[in-house]
Amino acid sequence: MLRSANCGSLRSENTDDQVTLAGWIGRRRDHGGIIFLDLRDRSGIVQIVFNPETASEATRIAEELRPEWVVQVKGTVSLRPDGSENPVIATGNIEVMASEVTVMNRSLTPPFYIEEDSEADESLRLRYRYLDLRRPPMLRNLSLRHEVVKYIRNFLNDRNFLEVETPILIKSTPEGARDFLVPSRMQPGSFYALPQSPQQMKQLLMVSGVERYYQIARCFRDEDLRADRQLEFTQLDLEMSFVEEEDILNLTEDLYTGMIESVTPDKALRKPFPRITHKEAMDRYASDKPDLRFGLEMTDISELATETEFRVFLSTIEGGGQIKGFVVPGQAQFVTGQVKELEETAKAAGAGGLVHIRYRGIKPVVQLTGEEILESAGLRMPPEWHQRLCDKMGAGPGDMILLMAGHQPRLNHWLSSMRTHIGTLLELTDPNELAFAFVTSFPLFDWNDDAKRWDSSHHPFTSPADGQEFDLDGEDLGAITSKAYDLVCNGSELASGSIRIHNRQLQEKIFGILGHSKEEIESQFGQILEAFEYGAPPHGGIAPGIDRLVAILCDSPSIRDVIAFPKTQSGSDLLFDAPSRIDQKQLEELSLESTYEGE
Ligand code: ASP
Image 1: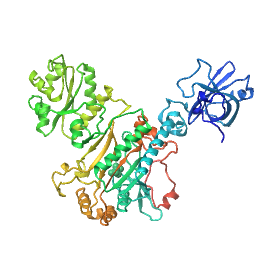
Image 2 (image 1 turned 90 degrees about the vertical axis):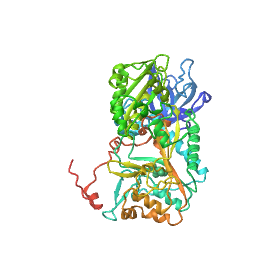
Image 3 (image 1 turned 120 degrees about the horizontal axis):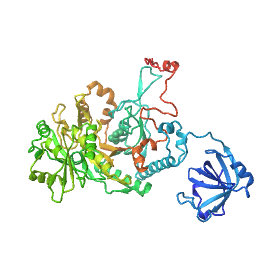
Image 4 (image 1 turned 180 degrees about the vertical axis):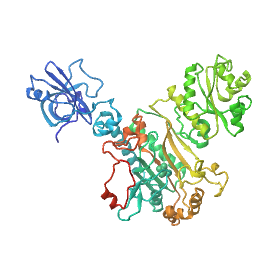
């Protein structure tokens, strides 16, 4: 070994130890001929002291050392003199008095400092990702990710799961996104698809009798990268036979609680995870992935609203819409500027407007402020009406009520954006707190108004809840519920799964409702339908995303910070410069012709 100890592991107990260290040069300070250098390896940083009196040759070499050079240092661990300890670093009580130093490699001046906080632009960090990853917080993220995956593997191995790899070159399996396609050279004109998830394969493994399967699986979805997504991402994909919904939820809850308590014990984890139905989540939080770190629960006040003379309310209700909103406790003092800002936020989310009512004073209904707004809103109602409004919504003196009018599903979308906005604004979102919940009983179908057809709300393999009759051309397919569930945390969806259909007739019926022709069903799903006829056991599973979970556990705002080599928002890898054009010869080998004209 080129070293006998790790930089970050040395403590006062090591005083007088002779050590050989190896790592990268960090900060440097010179004091009256003595040189202090930080030496860094994956374990952390230690201060190296070069004293010309006792180590003249080493000090001469140290004078030439520059940031990020790789060196080997031999020396003696020594307690720092009183008053010069550094409590910020783990090795802050000691330093290493160098006797020898060897340069193992030099470095160009890096394009940004390799330190805790980088001010560097993200595209520069991605272009030099290997240097960015050398920064301690990034190495910590990679290491935490490793701990998470290690915990998952141990947990599932202990429970008799088999880790099975499934292929990356497959046939398209729908998860509702666009496939990445790979042209086949040996079969000109044919294409493989990269898996959007191993969904059909894990179900086929259940037909095979694997009973308990998992895989740390890479999934590929060719989507426009809205928000914080990646074209390829990692899921813990798992599936079990002979189970019911509760079994999967309990296993998932045990996995998450055990993992978080072991990997990030300082996080404030709320236990047990509440289970709320999709309907309840939409009614109470206007979202199927509510942030449960705070309340701000919704109330439908459509009935009370019909008593007003406010045109917007009345016409919305007449057209089948709703008036819904929530109480912002203790915020009656919001000044006009703040309220304006809320209105802007509502408009940016697409809402027509936002009605606010502030209650000041001691009694529940004392006085209305923002008179002009209320007046123009036709909301100048008697105190008795306001009393009933406050009672219904749970508002009191000092509170502010926010209301919106509209039709679903958009109304809930606006309200949920406003709820999240207020939660952040009032600092109700402690990043150290983890508020998980299972959202269950999702609808089986969602109406796709653009395409004028029913889509699966999860994916087509999801089982309907028991005891519901429905036909291909049924009117109220939107009311059919499913055995699908999500795990959400702090406003993000972290996992999604379901009990599956394992019967050919039912599966064919669902494909029919989704608008697939008989031929399409046979060509796209023939294999799984056939397998269902050879003794498919009842089964179900879930697929927790790893990237977002690790980002939450690392307090990273972006999943890019927990992926070693992520792509940008426009799908580019700035380090490898991918995607890139391919040459004519490669195209010909694949029997492809380029129609691309730009250059
Ligand atoms: N395959 C699904 C997904 O990727 C998860 C599941 O149903 O297990 O969302």
